[in-house]
Amino acid sequence: MTRIGLTEQSDAFLQNLAAEKGYSTHTIRAYGHDLAEFADYAVRGAGLSGGEEKRSLTIDDIDNLTVRGYLGLLHRKNEKVTIARKLSVLRSFFRHLVRHRLTDEDPTAAILTPKHSRRMPSYLSVDDMFRLLDQTSDDTVLGLRNQALFETLYGSGIRVSELTGLNVFDVDVSSGCLRVTGKGNRERLVPVGEKALDRIQVYRDRLLEKTGIGMADDGPLFLNKNKGRLSARSVAR
Image (cartoon, rainbow, N blue to C red):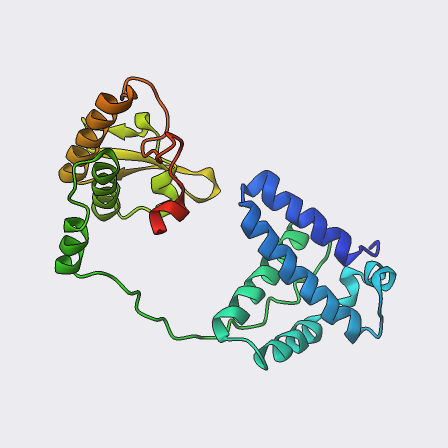
């Protein structure tokens, strides 16, 4: 089998994630960082150094011991959840190589994922949520918008990034659902509470009254003070 460069195939794998998997730029950057870190370790393990030597490292130079040595190094300075994530990246990479017949063996196949305890997510109680909603009780356009967006988050369970990505035509009042675009640009229908739909209507009615922007034309559902799309950072603030 032809000796295939590790760095070359890492670059091709990242391009595949973007073109075929629809991964976000942030995710691809994180995968690239982890693969580059592994390649640096493999270069040192092979007794090489420098950029040109790194380019000469091939898939055939990587075996089970290389991966285990890399994980051993990670154990000195990383949490188990981080190690598990980095191993997951390597698994995806080598499975990609095997699937495309660029190598015969997956050096990560016999390696177990480190077990880590699952922390319970933090959340607001019902009373806390009601107190939060009471803090946004003014009837200005921005106040009504904040009531609508918090009710929508509470009533649907969608991510903040999904909330800010909503457009007017993504709201289907008749079915009580939102058309949400999530990770990988995948769309799904999400039920939302009747109170959230009422709040959205009140907000958009006041927005129409003050700015002339109604629900008849598609566009961002939640607007900032400059009439542009509200950002996730603004929601957090």
